[in-house]
Amino acid sequence: MPEEAGPRQRRRATGGGFWLLLVCAVLPGAAGVLVFGYFALVDWAALQDAYAHYRQVAASDAADLRAVFVAEAQQNIHRVNLFADGVWTLLSAILAAIGLHGLHTRACVEAR
Image (cartoon, rainbow, N blue to C red; front, side, top):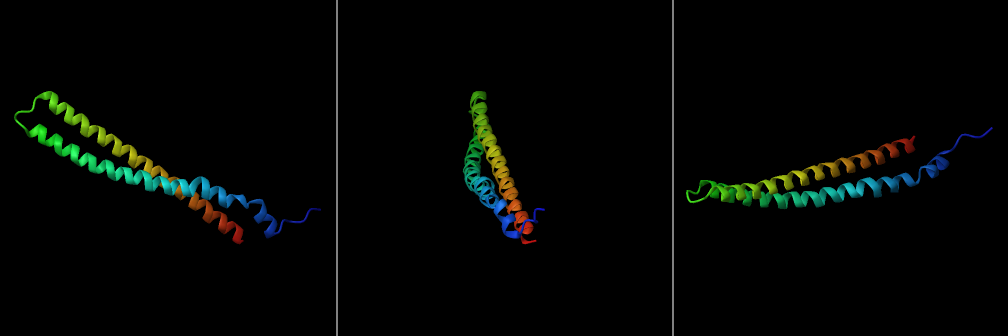
């Protein structure tokens, strides 16, 4: 009859799980939060400038309709970019959280 696996054998069987979770989930998730969060802040500043320009053009009496449409399109481009960066930041945070949860769950199972 086979004997029940001891803690050392169980740890050896799941030993690569720690590094797999760390390399494939936690580190890319954390890096994504930093990178996409940074670019979201850059796009936020660009959106503020583009929106101020749009308001200035829209309030101007000398502005024609084409200039208003161009200014609106410019601020909408920054608005969409900011939305996309925010979504990628949140998705990266979810990936990192899943990895951290996996590491914690794995540590709790091994401690038993």
